[in-house]
Image 1 (cartoon, rainbow, N blue to C red):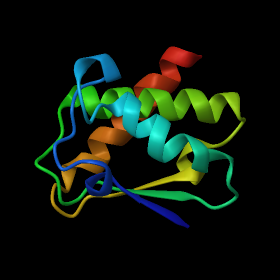
Image 2 (cartoon, rainbow, N blue to C red):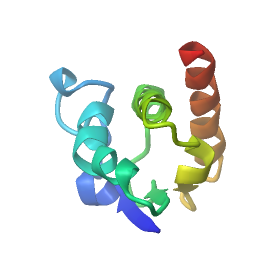
Image 3 (cartoon, rainbow, N blue to C red):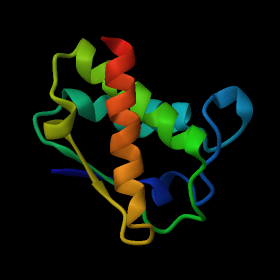
Image 4 (cartoon, one colour):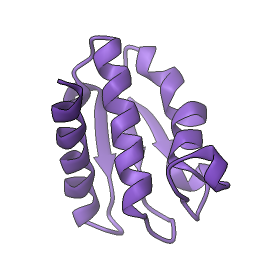
Length: 106
């Protein structure tokens, strides 16, 4: 399993897009997640040790992951695991965004 810690990227997760400033979901996906989707191991995204998450960051990250997994014919629920001890409801929120994005893509 590959562990990707958001806190190694930023402790202040930003908005959706790079154009919106540092720490965006788009930048996090491009720099930290995308390359690992082609690996055989699953990816654990560790959301702990930050100052919190805007819904725009989470929903954009979920959308990007689900689109890439669909394109690469990967089962997103087998490829991605979520860790969030700091905010227990975050995993449920994230999977809700994944489910919404899968519905949008189909």
